[in-house]
Length: 298
Image (cartoon, rainbow, N blue to C red):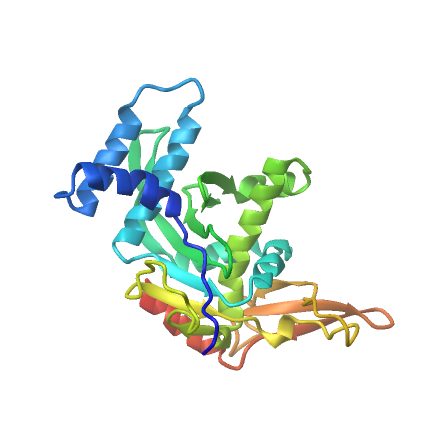
């Protein structure tokens, strides 16, 4: 029998420390009622010495993602290879404007609460969670298009949360402090995961991994398993090497009318050096399939 693999659980902090505690106090309440209580308590509690409006916004954003998860509306993606995470969080972003177009077309219209203005506003939102093998904490992301056409990311990892906007990405990406490094890596991971799934839909399989060691995962939720495409792997430099190697490159959305049949699709452009610079474009023969997957989720 094949060995079972445990995967990280996204939003575990909110499930255990917010929902879990409140559910014990009010077991008769529905999850939506519990969400309303939790958010009201956070917004109306006096600020502590280590609190500010920004930290409250992060908690409320995490609770909103938790509510989507409790309703079974959050997309869950299981990485078969956790090295894929390292590849996606290090791959440069070169096509943010077309990512915005994609989010506008494929995102879901949702009301988002903005703590600074104390109002809810409608946004195009794309939300998903990542499970990694043999790790404890999973990732959860919410990307939204703002009124000024910027794309804002909320990310959750363990008890940490953060906000990042493409307006500041270029500047943050140049910094070397710990917070900036985390923010830029999270932004790339979120954006590139979407691009990767669109570029290589043959790597996207419905359901959870076959070797999943169940740890209270909701198997009725929106689950996908994501494998690593051979098209982004480098050839092993040595027959003794067991470390995976990935190609350097970036994802790009085709927008020119020149690409009659591929317009609006993502490709991966890898760069190699053979007597000068050459670019190799990779995509999947099943590229049209992922559009159907996205449409079913929105």
